[in-house]
Length: 96
Figure 1 (cartoon, rainbow, N blue to C red):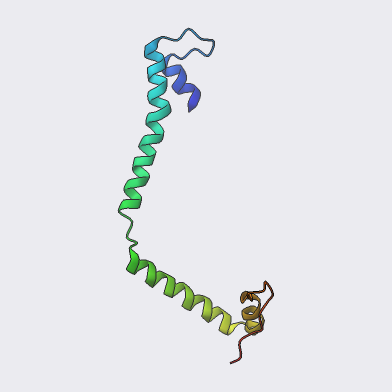
Figure 2 (figure 1 turned 180 degrees about the vertical axis):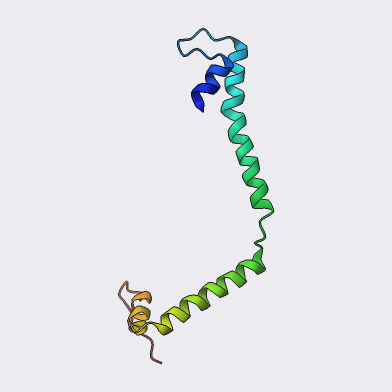
């Protein structure tokens, strides 16, 4: 895409470009990324994730992960590995 655009505006890599060509190069260099950033901002602005939705999503993820741990035969070992003590060591598995 780059080379056809440069050819389209008449850019000469060896030099001797007109001010109009340099201006067009600036518009391409700044304009295209700005358009994509504006499009990304519009998507983010309208994304339906507020504090309430984020909290519900976090709860669903926690429930899903807990369900997987409960079903796994090594759930006690997995729980012990995921709990890191304050001294940097692995804490004992919680008792049930």
